Image 1 (cartoon, rainbow, N blue to C red):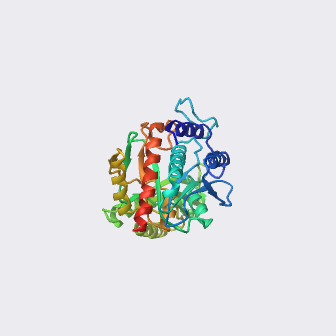
Image 2 (cartoon, rainbow, N blue to C red):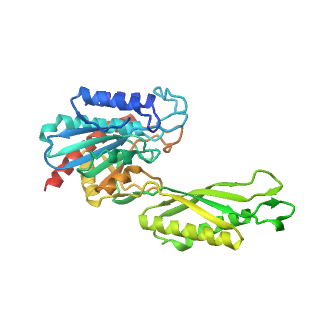
Image 3 (cartoon, helix red, strand yellow):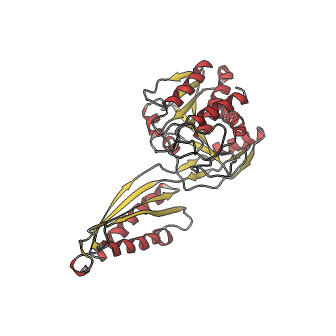
Length: 375
């Protein structure tokens, strides 16, 4: 696979972004390239996404994963290959991820007969809405995978740099909604009702102590209240008020502790104001925890290939790659792509020069991990 060809693939994908569960054109484009190069494809039974298979079918199986979906963002990069779809943009680098893993698949195809096992390359839909990984897993086609590898664009490193860190690297991402019920009345006579708004203010203040006073100071965690809603006019005390927010943590234990504390703080504080509080809590992706041994071998591989390695910082954003790690160990690496604008920003860009080195890194590492699993 030529570097020039991979760059063309990346630019095509960037021009044709598709939102989660609508990646039909993307799926067809990648499928055609793989088929033209003789790469076997598995029947997932899904409308979008695909799994390529390389190897002799003997020995262990490892997986490389790319995500494919774009974001509802209006592009503001000024690139000559900018999005041709108004209001939709690859603002998180999934076009880069797909081009990279496509390149890895084609490099592995060149060595297919000598691979000491099987490599499955996953092109996953719907990462941005946190259920694409679960869909791919539900096919049952990944049950034999012994470890999973993936990468993610990182604008704060230049092309040719990899961020490798063992242990927790990405956080949980949970949603909560707390509803407070009082008793509505005319604002001129608050004594005739039970105002939920003071209860909301007290809950907001009390919630801050969950991190500062109830959570281990050496544990990374965030509780953010991001939406408030109460009443619809200026002279009526409302019956109810609602707050919504997110919980981020690096371990499942801290996540569960925060959930319990949120419920207790909300209910007890509301009761002190004569109100009633109820909480809805939705678990999102779990933490991404990198396997130490894989990271050590990845660093060695990267340096052998002439890549610069950094110990990248953990992030409180989430990734549904964590779903695969419930099945087998694995690792997520940060791929330096430059640009200077963070993921999800309208001016986010990824340097195409980083594609081929990353593709080669994943191809070589996948082959090494297969050999490691046979020892």
